[in-house]
Length: 379
Image (tube, one colour):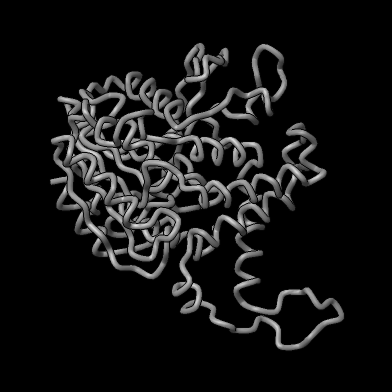
């Protein structure tokens, strides 16, 4: 190990440090909301901190579409990758692992160890691919519930998530009202707009029309990498904001000279998007991307013929809903709509709006104002 690797593994103030292993929970079978069934459910998860004797200090973290179970610490000596929310989870941090037992699982349908389309069906000894059942956000939540039961936890101090994770947090408070004391929902919505669905459809089309997709039957190392890369580039644009992109890239040039190929990378923003696309195909599965985007498109808290506040009628948890000023994917008005419905239903709910220029992904970056909100709310 060289000096730079050694320094990376040193435990700095507030850091969890090296996460030496991850855990798996296995269940004999799982029935989806559609009625479809898989013969074996496997969930990959990580935990941080310690469960108190009363088992009352558990916080469940729900990841967004491109996230996974590794939200804090450094996941292994091999790749030394910090968790996607490492800056907010740890000893003394807003989600304080000196006080709380923090759990994060890879969502059902995922590609990082939890059962998904790339998993092997034990009945056929082949990957499920498109034979994996239709997926909804509620299926993810019900699978998480099995994990929480397995850990012997009857009550969750909080459920926290942003974007797709926020959708899961909302459903936890609705589906299991007696288990959840509080939720923190960041940059979420009650249901996708037509525009959000349209963006996802462009990404799915890029994957499906890639010849290497082969109707979902591909080897992981030989999948529809071009289509998945384009889908990621398209989605990543929706996660940013115009001002954020202008401030970071503007019209800065990557290459001032004109090559014989007129469509080589010319602008910095082009280089950035291509980098995002390339790194994504190295860690994500195309079929999982199809299933996850469909799941968020199907998410809808409006009960047919009733108002949104009826959806929250049985909710017992208090809620902190946070919107971000520059988020045009799930704009502040959609976050406020959730709080208005909760308040009209007589629930305890608070709305906070943070002014940031980084768009939808604002909840994933270091933000002192968000830290303060989370820290105080968890008290």
